[in-house]
Structure formats: C-alpha cells, structure tokens
Length: 537
Image (cartoon, rainbow, N blue to C red; front, side, top):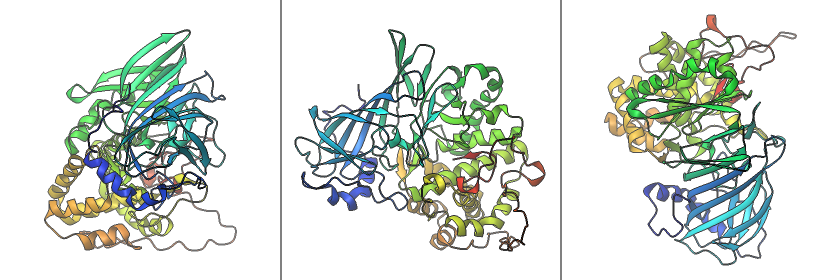
C-alpha cells in the first residue's frame, strides 16, 4: 500500500511548493493537445535540461521488482506513482529509457503511451486538472544489461544486483521524475528466488515466501530523491547492530566475505556518533553499508544504505585511515546531499564539498592528517580545477556521453576549499553554528547555493556576497583569508617531445603515503571528481 493515499486532498508541503517553483517556467510546455507530437520535456536544469518533468510533484513511489535469478534477463517490474498536479495536463511525461513498457494506467483507466527521447509520454483517457492527485501505474521490464555509452542504473555484482543512479540514471531502472528537486516517499518490493536476499532503502515492512521465492518489502520514512534509490539482490548476509540513540544499523555483505568485512563495519556506530557531535542528530530511520562484490570505481551515498566496493575493504593497498575517511564521506552525505538535497545539479558542491570536508576533518582528528596541509595543496590546484571543470557553484556541463563527468575535483576538494575559506573568514564558532543550522533548517528538503549564502550571512551577521561571489563563481581562486602566502600553482609547462606524462595528482593522500593501485585496477580519474584510487561521490 502506498504511503500517500490516492484520495488524500491536503495541500502540498513547503518542500513541494519549493519544488514546484522550479517547474513554473516549464509548465506551459506541458499543456499540449493530444494530437501534437510527443516530445521529451525537462525542468530546465542547467546541466541536465531534459531531466525531470513539469506539471506535477511526486508524493510517493511504489516499486515492485521480480528478479529472475540471473543478470542477463530483464526483471519484471511495476511502478506506481502518486503525484499532485501543478498544471492542467493532457499528457504526463516520465523519465524512462531502458526497459519495455507493457501497459500504463492513470487513475485506474488504461492510457496511451509512447516514447520520446528518454521520456515515456502518457496520454490519459481524460486530462488531469491542476491541483489534484493522480495515480500512474506502469507495468514494465527493468533491464540489468548495461546501456551502451551510458553510466549507472543497475550494477551487476558477482552474485546479483545493486543500484547506482547518480546523477541521471534512476530512469534506466524505473519510470520516474528523475530530478533531485522532486523528493518522494518510497515503498520497494523485491521478489527473488530462494537463496538470494534483497535489501532496499528504509526499514523492513514484511517478508513473504511463496513457491520457491521470497518477497521483501521496505519503506522509507523520509522523502528521497530518485538518484538515491538503492536495491541490493544477492547471496548476502545482513548484519545488525545498534547506533547512537538506538538507531538500527544494518549492513549487507557478500556472505563469503563476512568475516573479513566485520571489523570495518563495527566502526560505523562510532562514526555516526562523531558526525552527530559535529552537526546534530542523524537524520534518517536507519543506516548501513552495502558491500557490493563489483568494481565500480566509486562509492555512493544511496539513502540509508551507502554503496561501497567490497575490495575497498579487503585489498591491503588502501591505508586504514583512508578507508575510514571514505566511510565518513558517504556517511556525511546522509546529512549533506540526502536529507538536505540539491535543488539543481549546479548545487552539487553543497553535497560533495561538505562530504569531503568531514572526510578530511575525520582524517585530521582520528589519523593526524592535517586539514591545513590538504587545503593548501587544494589551493595550489584550484585554478586548474576551475579552468577544467568550472567554478564550484557553476560547474561545466558533463562531457558528451559521460554524464557522471560533472563529478570533478572542483566540486570535491575545490568545494571543501570554499568551506575552509569561509571558516577562516567568519571564524570557527560561527562556521560550526552555520553547519548545524543548515542541516536543521533544511532537513527533508531541497536547498540552493543562494540559501546557503543567505544563512551564512545570517549566522555570521556579515554581508558575505562579495566573498561568495569570488569563491563560488570566480574563474580564479581568491586569496585565502589568513594565509597570504598560499599561491596557486603555475600552469604546467608543455611537455617536451617524448616526455612521459606525470602521474595523476592525488590530493587526498600525502605524497609519501600514496597507495599504489592493484594490478589491473584503474586509478580513478579527475573527471570522476576524486584524483585517487577510488572515487567517493
């Protein structure tokens, strides 16, 4: 049963009003005659203009997947969406690009449908008027076979599947309004053959066995963006422990690697307590790590169940302090990026800059890796990062065919450098009050760079417009407050004929402690956002 009843007639929350505001400029394109050609729509995001759709605000998703027991056949799936309309709709566009649609219903009646670009365009029997609830049910397949020249969606593991939907890949898995401005509640059901275990975002809501298969149901208790959806299917063991305030902590690990992974997982409750000491109480109903037996090249902050590569923990090449810091990076995202989500993808620096900040702060406090040294090195590289990827709050568009290329160093250490400069500018006490106020004021909501700038001014009692203009939008990195001796690195000289290129810069590990990538494992490139052996989004 969906968390938001179809008959509900309450007004949208403040979050829904702010999300709807993003759609206002695009709503007119949704009021089309049924005879007009189907076209892909979007909410006009600067980096992903065709993501999301105007005219409605999703309240809840009910996702049902049936796994066939292998990774080469599509899953059977049913997606049910309850949404509040914000315009009169003759058609409804959903983002969906990798599966076969078998049927569509709107409010229980069959509806016509066709595809346009990466949109599923639905024509209901009767138009849906502004200010009403509508229920859309799509019966479809969900294909785990990767899409050529596309990244994300289902991740095929050694024993099953997981999801990696950032930044625009949830619609490779299920029909949705695939933009972070439109958070919703989720119910997720997964049916798999006996011998497999399924886990998803949120808390368990039932297990049913029937005819050689098992169905698991999970429900979220807080709104979630589509890019943060997670489903794990595999020959897994679920481990349980207790975090601060009785928080349920559950981890999902390949059964054969349980013994090796357990010492790492024991660290999570203490890391949650450390983050709570910095910014306040953990914002969700549960947390845990999903250790996927797959080589992805990144880790991912899927809500309440962060995705990690198993080999990050079992390969001795990675220093212990480094692995723990990466764990804190994804944990910090639960506050910064998940609970407080970005209104647009240009606000990505608020997610990654903060997660990188607490990753670095944890390494400083727990492993004696000075924040100052890391930020000085980042300052040296910042002009080059800005030239390659744009300023932190105005990142360049993704490279053609590589949509995850927005995850560049400018929104990781480059954005953490902005936070370091802000702390230098307003002082440690004001900065710490700002961090707590930010996650408290915008919990379960979305927020913008402008919201952060206003709150910083409010907390510090200062006009910071000039400061933020340079640090967030300038082509060149401004002088660092308190460190007039810090200088940007000189531009690299052209290589002499036959000269070998230098190794990629590795900001997160001191030069004398660089891990060496295992044979056959690529070092994550700067275009992934992390110039290190593993990239944490």
